[in-house]
Length: 204
Ligand code: PCA
Image 1 (cartoon, rainbow, N blue to C red):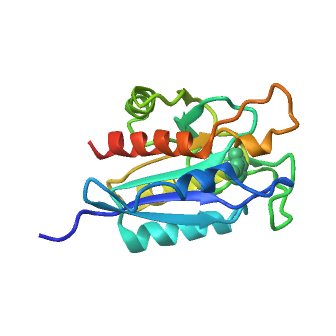
Image 2: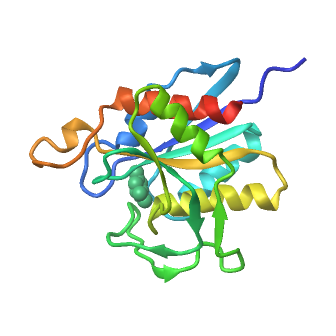
Image 3: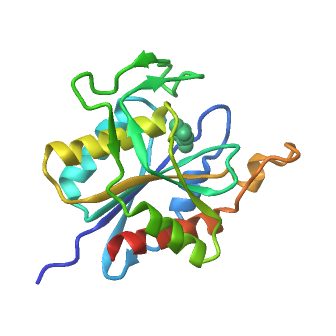
């Protein structure tokens, strides 16, 4: 019998003037194996297009059973397990390659939206059971994170792959809000615990 299929988890590089990205700081803390499944961690650029290309390549190569992409959502206080990715890109700030879309489709011939194939409510419940504040979210925004989630789900749908895939936004780290009175934050180890709980729920 071969080894269990890998789990793929991605995080992002810093963007928007930050020197860290809470998503990668949390993803780095995940174990390298969960319930016998190797955990592959992928650091992605905050770039429309290239981030999607890179995760599509990783999915094709690794054939994971579960894919969770993670991004940072400053201003959110809870881990957000995203329900839906929409086929639209609109950016308040340019991405790290200088691209600032203003209403273009991610895949012009693609459907308007995809629903996560993760068991979203079970992921939320699992994170909460492990003491991590978590909620389901109805929007991943229109920036690079939504684009990445859409690209993953589109690749899975087009290739008829049976993969539980979705996206989790994590709050800023304490070091990102040191001088921002009243802004929410979550330490990386707590976000990592919530992501791990969601992964376990997705493996069930
Ligand atoms: N958050 C951004 C892109 C990269 C990240 O960590 C977003 O929510 O789209």
